[in-house]
Image (cartoon, rainbow, N blue to C red; front, side, top):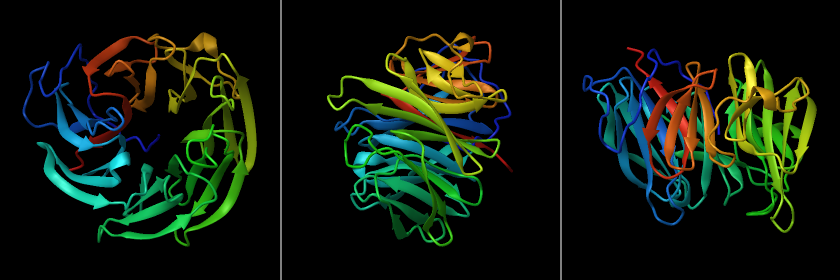
Length: 337
């Protein structure tokens, strides 16, 4: 998914943390937290959110339901989408952590996916209802949705408009969708539709351009195809990587470049959107990276072994945390007071 990155004032240099315990001693309050969405095992209702404070201490919010899909921070609020439990959880954040039990907002069996906050509203994508819904942060009521022509996945904003990827034409197809739409949040209408190639999933806004990570499958599900696209001033350029590429689903920016998860690490994209394989950083095994984001100049990796690793731009590991099953999203809170 995807994200507006809030700068953290402290770099985390940790060698290991365990669930609900501290590996590094420090004060009980923290001026910043990194939140890690751990999906859990599908159908097991064991999705959690882990918290890493500025001293490297970790703790977790208990079982939140079935598939913790995404997290987002806005001001002093933490928003958590619990996909297969069809709800959004809202928590207050302070230097003491989060306030439980929080507010629960039912999405009405919509299968919510990803979200972004703009002008005190949470815009979030939904599979079952095939739409973008709007959570008003003053009333905590869900407003009238925008129904789309296929299933939406990621959603980002440039501060004025929304961009939504639509990788699926139908539920659980082989990522046969090919569109990214530009939405006016004031009128809740589609302004532009871009054909970017099969399977657009994760989106990234970088230098006023929208980058797209793509993935689709053969009809028998045995072969995976990867690619990247870019929307610049309404013009789409694409690169198809074909089969046999150990590419992941995340796309991120760091150190003035755009990266894709690739072969157990992250690798920058060239100007033609091909992967610069020789400049890969990180080496955790070809199928191990579940999610990656840049936080304060460091790259945070959620691994399929249920750990989170932090690497610098040279690939050196500077942080290690134990987490829940399938760490698939990050969000950052930095105390503004």
